[in-house]
Image (cartoon, rainbow, N blue to C red):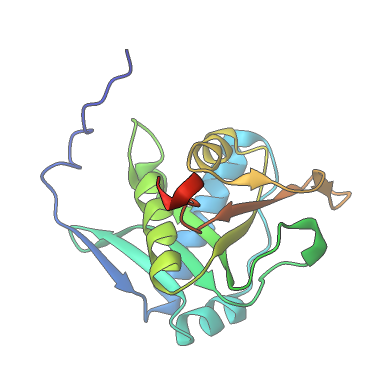
Length: 188
């Protein structure tokens, strides 16, 4: 049976969500997470541009989870795709939102922490509340724990695994946010 206890520190600490206004803070969190994940997976970290982070912060797209006042996790949610993808590769959607720059502080990436799950659940809830009918993302399939969590939460890969020729791989994922259709006769 799976251990369902909440890891020490997560049950008693003060957790708070905010829309970030601090470019330096979220860029540092993003780069620290990238470096940790690259070292752990043996892959290269993506190149991050401070200008992109600044633009996303100014637009109010960066959601930051704090633990006792310190950054613990983050994600970016936008209406415009932050990656190049053939829209035909995805299932139809009228109002898709795009999840990117999911990051967890390295100290929360071990010991069964739920910070990544908190970030993804918040992204799904926020996208649905904003009126999105789908949530799309680009992910590194070599980050197996992250990819497994995305799969569990209903993200489905569309299209092949892509490579940039320099060892960085990515997949395009889609999660429908539409409510389930009623059964025959209009009943569930």
